[in-house]
Amino acid sequence: MKPAYRRVLLKISGQRLAGEDGWGINTAVIGRTAQEIVDVAQSGVQLAVVCGGGNIIRGIAAAAEGMSRTNADYMGMLAGLINSLALQDALERAGAASRVLSALEIPSVAEPQIRRRAIRHLEKGRIVIFAGGTGNPFFTTDTGAALRAMEIEADLLLKGTRVDGVYDADPERVKEAKKYDEVSYKEFLTKNLKVMDATAISLCRDNALGIRVFDITEQGNLQRVIAGEAIGTRVGP
Ligand code: UDP
Image (cartoon, rainbow, N blue to C red):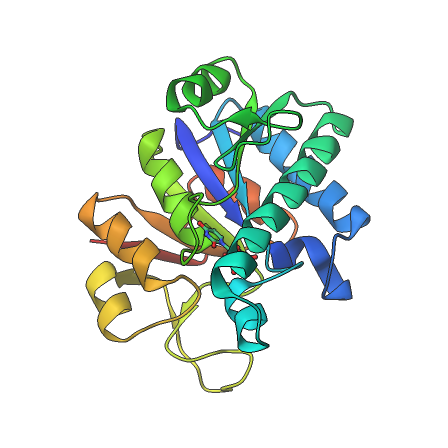
């Protein structure tokens, strides 16, 4: 497979790592995901990955049950780091070199977030996993992913999720929901579409970073997207 891009950032939601379990880390799912990531990395594309933490804790949900939002958000970022370490382990078992760089400094398990170091790893063919989101509460991992994608000058931000694109309503609840093949940042924001949060979308809009939302649960889709196939939804100017 010939990659259509030089460097991409792949965001995986925490929920993906939980698989059918709905919570926590499903080792078989993370193993399959890692294998797909290694396969595309071997095609020569430089790959950075960001894992969400929603399979363990979401700040907003914990705050709704009475926890301090800030505290819950830091727990959410740590959840993303736990997922990142699990993914690194799975990538290594699949035969790829990878490095975890964390926005929250925990030097005994991850390197600090240093942009130039991340780029160096990518140039050497290592898969870079950015952990800890933006490092700040009141943000999401999607926003962290958009931020890191811009820092490393990625050609594209890939959002791998369990729906096959952006819809005008929640396809898991509304049967007639219509899927977009392409949608502009502006329409995404004015229609308040879901799948990615508005902060991430506006950051991408302001810096002209293209996004592709696709179903990562379907085997082979990651490879198709990296080969340049127009599956899922393209969010752009
Ligand atoms: N989070 C945060 N700041 C960030 C990234 C994440 O506070 O920059 C927290 C937030 O509480 C969020 C949780 O980490 O709910 C898990 O991330 P997210 O919900 O984005 O994970 P995903 O939906 O991708 O699994």
